[in-house]
Length: 464
Image (cartoon, rainbow, N blue to C red; front, top):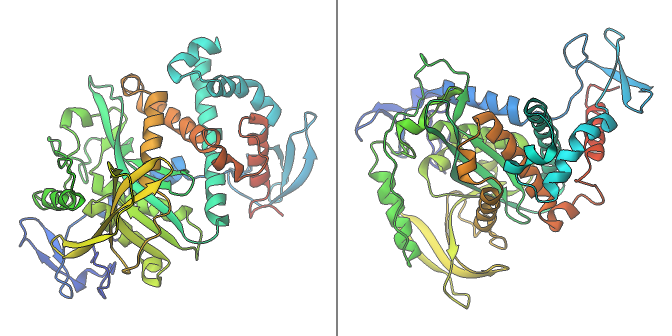
């Protein structure tokens, strides 16, 4: 994995993503410390590497782990082989290193405790109502919600990777930001900057990460979010090209290109950890996303128009970008007042003179004004599916299920558990098209979920 994120981020430059700092010149010409690439003339703000690496490790540990088999005696993954079943039918394995015998998840036992909660959620019970309707005491309830979140996260992760690996042709992914709320423990709501990636054909929510680094000591200040202002959004305009220009102007007006102000300091204090600058979270997101993507597949990545989101993408996806398997685009999409499709228009905008294109297209939900800019090979993207529409749909459904006012009352950990549970429900129970991809699997059954995780874990590379 890359450990140096200071590099040239210009497509087609020979220095693209080259971590050798001797190739660059340190400069303060633009009013901030940066590395200047002598080949293309681009300035990139200097980053600290450790916050990116630390946040990436946290995401991998908390969000990307798939079911695996650890010998409870050796306390690590070892080679194992099947060793029958328990009296209630739970698969057992035998460690080939220490010869101890242990069992995997017990689907029936887990179902007895978690199926009632899942059934209530599937029936339309909201998180704020679930404790009362479950008739559990608070301690038992929150333990089981944590267990349910862990179980559903693993199956979601497993099946999302299966979908990405088995889909044919070029897939499109859309990446955009939003903010999430929780209780800070310090008298204010905690406001995190989230980056999410959605698959554009069916709307699978692939990955959602944020900028809270857990359990960090307050004496560590490297990479912390330090702004105390909220950047104003560009005014909506009937002209897509005017919106693009306004965003360029907003980015260029910052002290540094990657210095996004999304919250005031009172909203960024937490007993759980430290809030990092969004630029660090963006790099960690792209590193984490790259671990989910199958090798040698083609992807079109549609990005929110934000310079450091693009920088994080091209830095951490460089080999596939250079090979032509990955293409990057900025994308705007908003519902249109038009009632017919339009011809495509082009315009050169921005400090690098990028070519932007706009047109009105029809999707199942109606007409949308689509504006995009190719950031890599100048190919016309596949716009058959609208990732912005899916991103907005996910957030609208989430906020109906877990309203912002309720989010403010939840600890960061519990808010995260609820979003994990919602993502599973959204991916596999809100849309018949999404669930149909996986055949007859019953996504409403804890027994089937636990059995599927057992099967994956037992067939891991450490099984003989």
